[in-house]
Length: 433
Image 1 (cartoon, rainbow, N blue to C red):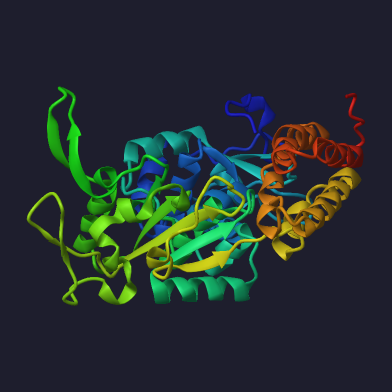
Image 2 (tube, rainbow, N blue to C red):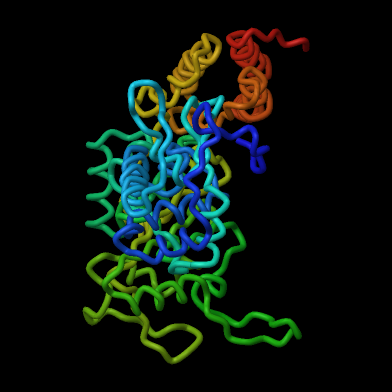
């Protein structure tokens, strides 16, 4: 979609139609809550935040709700405007139906999706900027249905996962590379909240040198090189959650098994347990200051662990028993992934997916590997419609999957190359090497 499309490329009927509403007219309408109600302002704000133009599909993907919601809100708004102002309408076709949304937008077909692109009329956009309604950021809703549309789990798997998390308050998503652990973690938090509010989420990635001082509290050099006592990211987030007990807060830890967990959590290890949260008589004195500290009840932890990482040792049992573990698996056979793939009317694409599944079967049967090393579906979830599909698939095979196979079968180079050639063959490419 073009950011600055030539105005002549935008149309709404066979005639040059305009509702003839001035900037002043629009400001008066915006100030009238009977015309621009809460839903109407929400939709307008979404379109503005999307650059002033969008399809209903884009709005649904970026801000939640459904495409039908945006269509209905705009149609009802346009009808109220027409009744209030008496502005003329334009016909959609010869059957007597009107383009009501043309009162607010210029329109054009999106060549890729086939849906209509709305572009705010200049007068309305200028009026919106002058009117400046509430500056409160839009916090779109996020439901179980939204989660299931984005994360390829069944409703039963979703309920199992959320039940575990609510009971234990700490959960780890484990699985091989590309199964969508990080993607799923944030959306799981959204679903638990019922909204896409990033202010209630914190994210950190562990590594081998990550320390208690960074996580909880410790002396660290300031800009002048002087050691000062600084609060760590987890300590600060706990205090934030403590101030708003009516809300749930979610702390996400990527690569959780890459850090020395006992060292990072220190004396807080005991407080992670769900029945020792909040003010139940369980608190510890922090190492660096005279403060009794506890983890609030409304704070949930979720970690991600790559089961294919040879370099990592297992989590110690003291910490392991404080978490529930949920295995994320490749979802090539799921309804969600199949629905996602249906947009690609390409025999090569579907042949490649079938070959990837055969590859995963071989990986699972390999005694040196197993199911924790399977190729995940997320490699194929971000293909761009406007780019050449075969070129994208070639890039994924050659530069993402093949290096992984070379690592898996570092002592069986011919095996890795054979599978690479088989994958390339499905998309009609013969490896010149």
